[in-house]
Length: 61
Image 1 (cartoon, rainbow, N blue to C red):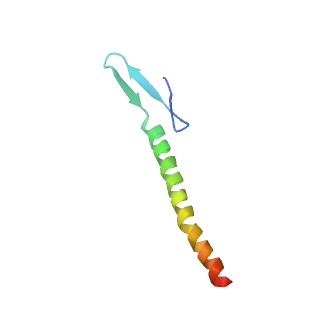
Image 2 (cartoon, one colour):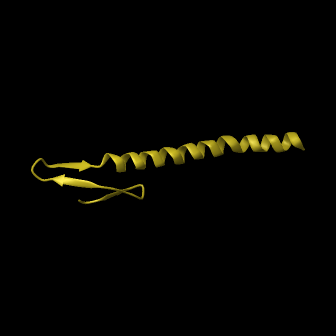
């Protein structure tokens, strides 16, 4: 097994020399994709929430 690194995460993979193909573990790929989606979602929430906080401060003043 030869792990590959993608977005700082290890993805397990095996090369089949007879068929000349790489087999990757689905679990590792899904974990990387989910983490990427979570990070994007958190960034979007933070960007969306920040103007609301500023509006609240102006309204309360």
